[in-house]
Length: 495
Image (tube, rainbow, N blue to C red; front, side, top):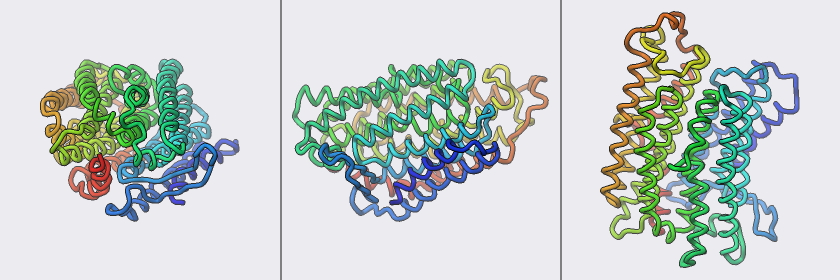
């Protein structure tokens, strides 16, 4: 019942906040922080108990739901799911703990945050396709209200655009899930059965249509160019902690979904289109990097780097799914790298967006050209911004480097020319982060920021936890690699 507790406790906490109006700002916040930490502890315990040499899916919980339709409440994790779920729970705890303007509605704000934590973890823990879809769709609801009610600027427009785009993707996903369900006898939504039986292998056009619907749905969520246009506005107008969750957790639902469903359940079809997917991934890498370089808005710049980094993840998945002879080890490396990138990006970009939230709380300004010289005024803020930026650009010794090295080492063994082109994205990413740091923290400081406040203890404490995560992974990644490699070997080796 450990997985049920991990996703159920935040939902109960959300209900407790929703049904009572007696909560003050301080008590609601403390309660939400305490509840949000529980899934982190439970998943950390599951991590310690996970057997890398055991079955692919462990901690399985199954209760019949609608047996006549093959529907059950099924939870379970492999190493990939456990790594991404644990990172997601940690990013939620950090985001809930981070200071934010709740606009005199703390109870509602923290209730929606806990609700979103619950359903987000459900996506990564589900072993039933329909249950996966229910959690996937419910995550849109929580994010819609968090952006629309507590955002700034054109928040309601951004929330509407986010919901419309991603809901269209969800509908495509539902059609594809029905196609997979009908393709196996007896009909079932059990992911384990669908992975084992590969029901649409050799199904021609039917398999192609189901695969297309799945990939479009997940590409919108990831997002992959050209279905990415909902992302920048949603980030710019969302509160900092909500942006941290959007980038750190919700985008991972797209890439995790690709691994769990089309990659694992449609290996033959995936391999047929792997090169096409890789081409879109490289386009996302280069587009995200170059467009980010041209942004003068701090938050919009970081938002476009998310498109760039998720492109790395998709490239790794595509290389892992290409059934090319004598590339088994390279494909395993690529899949391990894609998972590492999901974890690293969640921690790093989560920290960057929380830092953006600190800027907004102090100045309500994201224009890079309006800043300068904040190093002496805010040394703690500068230190964490520099560390997170260097991690994002792939500096050795930090998590981003470990992830990207695995991705490009694996991809080079499968699609060497795409790996070479994709590396250009790292160069541009380095340039855009260095330029951002120079504009904000160095040079002459405008007089209007003479009273700029450095990070408060709660802010640097939260950033220290996230930073410790991507530093530890960068310096000593074996604990994470051991967990992920076992599942990657089983998934790639079985193709």
